[in-house]
Image (cartoon, rainbow, N blue to C red; front, side):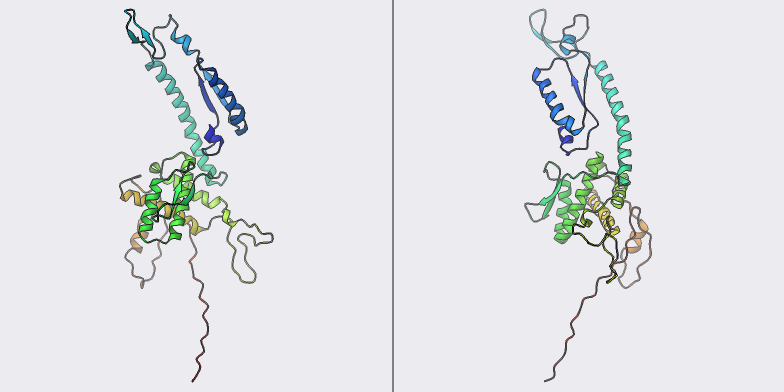
Length: 319
């Protein structure tokens, strides 16, 4: 509840305190303080549930077995332990709780995925990209507790050792941070990710606003507008198609690397187009580029034409 109230975990609908009826007074005083100073300001109700008093239950002579293990003295004076019957009672209660939570969990992730795809939910601003102690990689990804995500570091180290530029590795840092933020929000382990989570990432990037596009200076060009003098369009408010494709490439490369190491899911969660790969592999640069459909979830990106360099006219002087 504390982590959820501070924003490190997704917001809780309710926090449940199971009262045994025989807790020290300090426990109840601490619970009252948490409810007053933490839960109520965060809007998280605390539900107190109880099923009697565990001390009275243990000492009740009418019951056949005690509900908890107790150290006792046997009739002969030796030490022993009371018999307990938790198999039926506890198993039934636990099954009821699991069934209730499962019914809730089956609806909430699906609803949350729809909210993300439609742009009505945001990714939690947890984790960060921080400088690394070594040079390979120069930066690492950490979670909300400042702990290094080792599976991400292994992939980034491989990129750095393969002579990728520091800027490329840094862009992959932020791509992996965005991916892990999505997994944390959905409660999915990185090794259990499927195409469903990748589709949520692609949908969220299509609808979310890019914080890098926010104009802070008054009178600046509106995102997506065209400069009447130069004819050049300003950057759009959201994420560009190339940025979305780059995010998918980051996730695909991350899982491709770990699949080569024997880790992670068997199938890469990022969909690919086998025909496209076969058509573009081992192609001579002198041959015309074949027209092949893109993979699912990819965006059509406009062809990139580099700006021509401005040369200086060199005048030769006669002797």
